[in-house]
Amino acid sequence: MDGSRNNFSLNSGAALAIGLVLSSLIFGWFYSNAKKGDEAVTVTGSARKRIKSDLVVWSAGVSYQAPQLADAYRSLSENIPRVKQYLLSKGIAENQITVSSIATQTLKKQDENGVESSEITAYSLRQQIEVRSNEVDKIGQIAREATELINQGILIESNAPQYYYTQLGDLKIEMLGEAARDAKTRAERIADSTGNKIGAVRSARMGVMQITAADSTEVSDAGISDSTTIDKDVTAVVNISFAVD
Image (cartoon, rainbow, N blue to C red; front, side):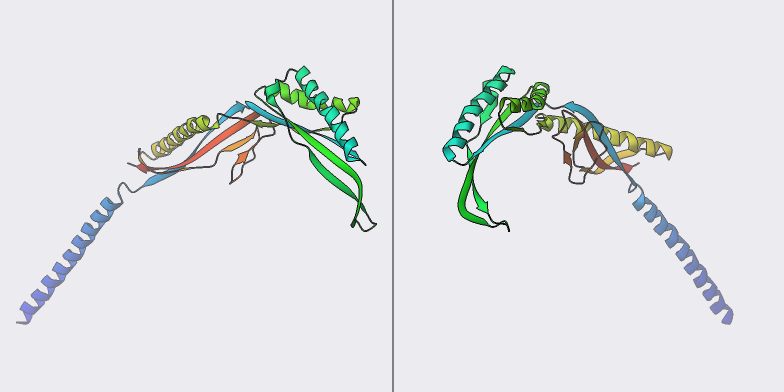
């Protein structure tokens, strides 16, 4: 009787042990197969291209100040046409030139504490001349030379030209494709080094475009859009996660 109970206990223990081993093997098999194919590699791809601006916007202000409004207006109305003629003589087309309306500022007498009184001391009048052109090099040169008008008694203030690239939409698509190809190449090299191959794309995220002065290393999370230089570098970045087979 006791022997039977002992044999039953041994058999039960052996069955339990075998059951635990089989359960572990089955769990391990399911775990292994569940994880298989879940591996992924995430890489960053980038592309950079040098571009030249195809649009320049340049403006200059002409201003005059006089105790009498009529005198200030007369000086301004006489010299704005002279500035426009100067620009035309430099080869700028008339349809590229825009003259703004007159801005008037009344200047009043101030006391020693900087408090204005009601007494008018002078009138300041100002007009803005703007040039928009695709001839970026020529306009840039004229902008630098325009201060020679001061020698002619014209009170002109030349602003720095702003340079833009108008085909950015098409370029963006092209460069994102190049950045994606770069990301795939990087992922393939990583997978090859471990004896694997990359599979389908799991996720992809586009980074912000960086438009910087040529050879600049400046970056920003919000993106950069340089307008101070004619030659620029455009950089596109993508983050892609690939399955590993």
